[in-house]
Image 1 (spheres, rainbow, N blue to C red):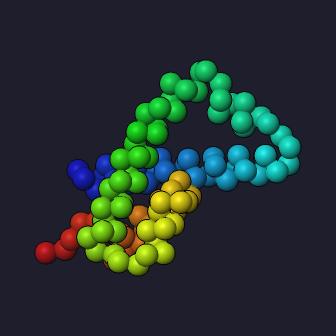
Image 2 (image 1 turned 90 degrees about the vertical axis):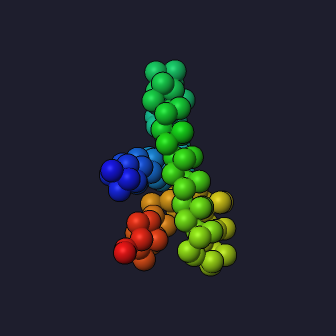
Length: 103
């Protein structure tokens, strides 16, 4: 069950990551379509639960970093580039079996 919840959080963080990249590209091109959609009142009802899920997942990954990984660069990336680095760090932690320890 824990793995399913973590994979759900990973999918949510990947979607937000892709939306953030698209938002940056649209901002560079001068198109404010995505920005207006993101800031509209209708989307705010979905935005708050997504933020709570992402913050909990982000804190979980920082705890995983403190237990198993001691590379400072990864912590800096988790803190300063949080929505952009969360999906990548989750895959690193999953590959190294830090998420669910094998017995």
